[in-house]
Amino acid sequence: MQTKKVATHSGCFHCDEVLACTMLTRYTNEFKNCSITRTRDQKIIDEHDIVVDVGGLYDPSKHRYDHHQNSFTDTFSEEFQIRLSSAGLIYKHFGMEIVKNICDKILEQNKQYLQTEIQLNETILQEIYYRIYKGFIMSVDAIDNGIDQYPKDIKPLYYNKTSLWSRISRLQPHWTEKYIEDDIQRFNKAMDMADEELFSQVKVLLLSTIPARECVKQAINGRFNIHQSGQIIAFETPLPWKDHLEDFENEMDIKGVIKFVLFPESEEKKAWRVQGVPVNQGSFDLRIGLKKEWRGIKDMDILKNVTGIQDIVFVHNSGFIGGAKSFQSTLKMALESIENIQ
Image 1 (spheres, rainbow, N blue to C red):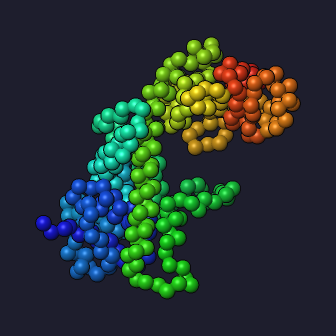
Image 2: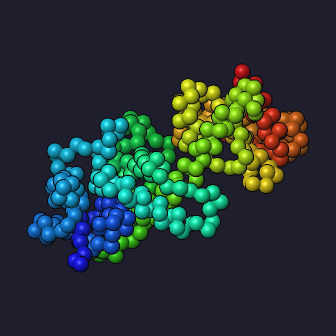
Image 3: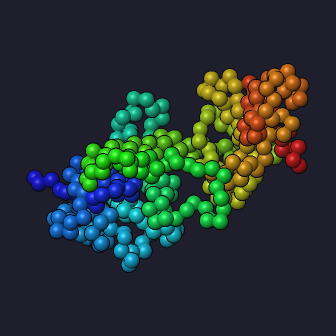
């Protein structure tokens, strides 16, 4: 059987077509292991089975996925305003299949290590599909379309040059190096980088974030068992709660109610942590932080004296997290911090 062929543009490569080619040739049933041609010759392009980021045509029925033409205005869904790049286009049309194949690979690789059985179903796949776009691929679309994360009149406090886009850009030949028109070796290295990022993002969602959802719901429902105020929740094991807390608060119409989260440092429960809830996802600002007079004290005798908690371990400089050896002590830290504000 003749192998199908993928075409993308030659010259400088960018994160969007690198990621698009990675998804197609590694995680789709139809185009897995297909060869990739990098060219701008339209006659050669026309000979290929699927074309991404070049060719001046968007027609899924013909597997043509360019987004540079003036007539192109498509977004991932009505929820999003950012135009798709070639990465978003391929993900929109092949994403569910891509996610399913990555999840199958992850479960096969990790089956001997999993403590909890994970059964893939349509609901889980849809959630991963949505979260991967919103939390990862949308940023690739945005950068390719020249859209900043923040208004242009706001000067950022710092710059992040470790994104996938930045890392792939650094694979381009430097101006001091000899330029090679179609350096497939660098392109393949960029694809490996994109693959690692995509795979790890799906893995975290499948094995950690999504399984934690029900635990967060149970903790919120049981919050009055922790304290009558209902402002503190607790977990029996460390888990990613931030991705779900705000969603459930909105569903239950209790937005902003939860102020602190308690959880053990490890399964042995020999130490506990108390962590403040951020004002919203991705923010470092807290609804309530631990008491200011406790923060950053390194001398344990002074810290114990100031707090009145004999098994206290630390309070972070920013007040976002603290620790003690017992659950009751972390609960006391949370309650006193809440009372201090009220």
